Image 1 (tube, rainbow, N blue to C red):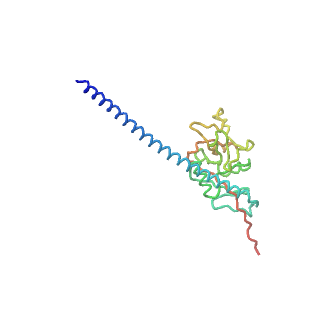
Image 2: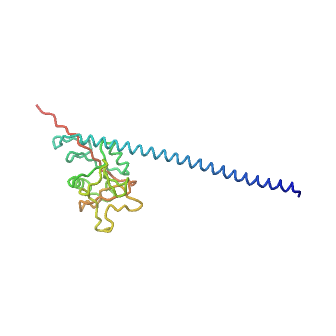
Image 3: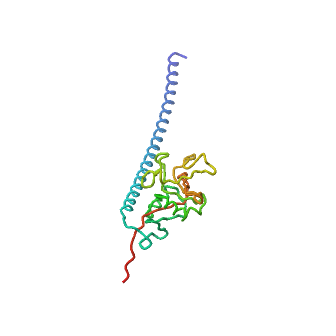
Length: 232
């Protein structure tokens, strides 16, 4: 083989190598384009979900502002709740039979004109226990409007108020899990609150649970107080 032929063969080999590298770069570029597209779609989905959450929070705040603005006092003569809702101390409560995730439950309560229940006193806790929870088992334990999804360990109600240490009813788990009192955030994570079957024996019976699991719910709304028409 002459030196010219050898040089040509060497250049042909270099061309083959460069062609292979070019194909690799083109494949890498296509993969990056696909990954960029996936990231863009995920970002758009996240932004859409964030906007939905902000819209729901605004609706809850507006609803609570309306509730707080209603200064009329309800009693046995003036109470007014929607069909299927039950009256107690100026509020209406709905105890569902169907099961939804925590977020779906909140949306369902808002759609019906309320929100997941906010427990503001021992008397309210006792009312709920007597009315519904005392006779339930674990599978029927309903969602309440309490979560630490935004920051682990910081529990907030649906109106964005932080849980009051003087008004909380976490289950101490003294019978079987004394080293793991509620809330204990069992893996893979428990960021939403339910009222449990142990309410049958004590007032402290909240426990944290995975928000994505379908459960019953307790909705709450302010009673619309209307006095009966006067009779002539």
